[in-house]
Length: 321
Image 1 (spheres, rainbow, N blue to C red):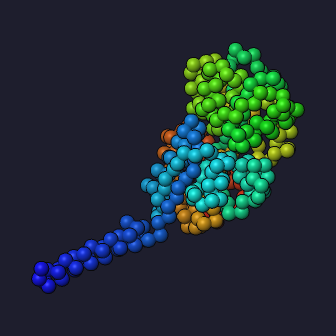
Image 2 (cartoon, rainbow, N blue to C red; image 1 turned 135 degrees about the vertical axis):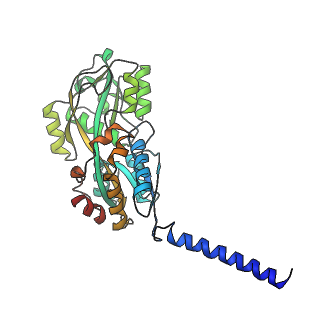
Image 3 (cartoon, helix red, strand yellow; image 1 turned 30 degrees about the horizontal axis):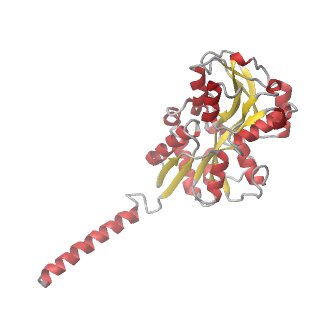
């Protein structure tokens, strides 16, 4: 091969490499500061999964320099640990679980100090679901019953323990079964549990599935028990689940909720935090299309239930604008 041909090939290869480097450097026109944000969500039967997927889609289309994805996980407790271990950049979690993590209580032996708040999203309602045929009307009626209390060590299971305590009950008084949302719903339909417990935005797909096949009942909490819970655990709020939320059950019931919140770590820049919140609250219609619970997301409520956690400065700046 002649020197001129070698020179041309080297020149061509050099130009191609230079163009590739330039393209990477400008991030496809993004200024070279592209942030990869993997969002930890929850199981496919819950609300985190569709909401997280919609948020990722919105960020990819509307947030400058953000490349987002979402993945199914074991939800709140698993998500906190994934953030701690830097396996993900952002997660949807219950605010009570985040409170435990920040303070090193309950399922967290040590304080997790690298967490940063992004925004509060929507209330997650503590739902005790039974079949109308069970005859169960109150939490006190759970004594001696088979109860799906959530996955072991999960946020749901923590809520169940706290609510049972308000009624003077412990696991010694029930036949507790550590089952996830989907497993608990299946067990309720199959008659292998009497009550399935979950903490999620209402309506929840797994409960809708049961209600489409069986006559269900949601078990209410009395006002005095709600007041006791709120006093002991300030992350709870009193909530009404309107009649008609689930097929065939038309009674309003009182219960409590925690908040679903977006949490990142101290590795997320203020600029990225600002872009993320701007994109989310500027495209709520698209997120609501993924799940009706997202209709509760609002900028003026984006700091609700976030008092205990240090905020990403950029996210807080946008929320307060």
